[in-house]
Image 1 (spheres, helix red, strand yellow):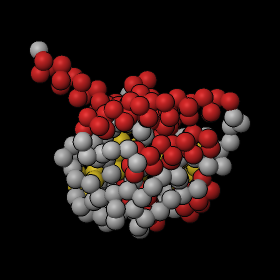
Image 2 (cartoon, helix red, strand yellow):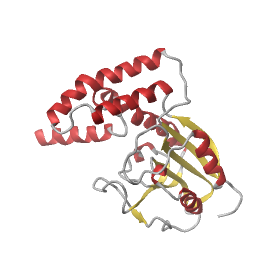
Image 3 (cartoon, one colour):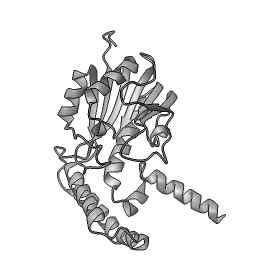
Image 4 (cartoon, helix red, strand yellow):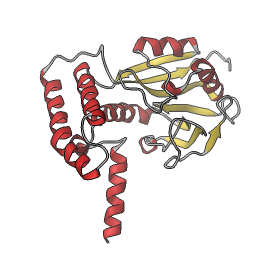
Length: 251
């Protein structure tokens, strides 16, 4: 019974990393950035249908949100800035050519991947190749976040920048959602800084106490500030972008 309870707790905490609930406000120093991505993906996912490719899939953290798909295939590169212990990869990608024929998928999704791609124009061309005409593209990318998965972190995109890149690569941009307000983004960066560089990290009990004493109050303060201060979006954590392959008949 104890083992079963521990397994359920472990599964709950694992889910909180990408699909946070109220518990994330209490325990997570990255609650706002993760919740912003989750809420945007959750709002867009039901509109994604047919056969779907998750490009740079990792552990497929949002697969359960895509309730109207026929199939969901994950592809990832073998060597990246993180290990694949918890990954659920169906197909490995060599960094150049996706092992699928032209026009194979109805949609491609990719979450927090494009900042790790140095040759983004070439990758978008390959994604476009495996999409059917009019096929959907759903991505999330960071704007305000620190360097991660070093040294495989190459870019940040404004909402205008990613729109330009996608249109140039033969995609129509349907919608762009900024996942946090200006206030929340500033607070999230401050909370991340404190937990990464000020609070104790090595000793687990001290880390847990630090999170309860500091992270929870700071998260609550951020929620309060966001409620009372003007909503601005010139500074934000991430963009969620919904696009589509142009129906011009070209690969």
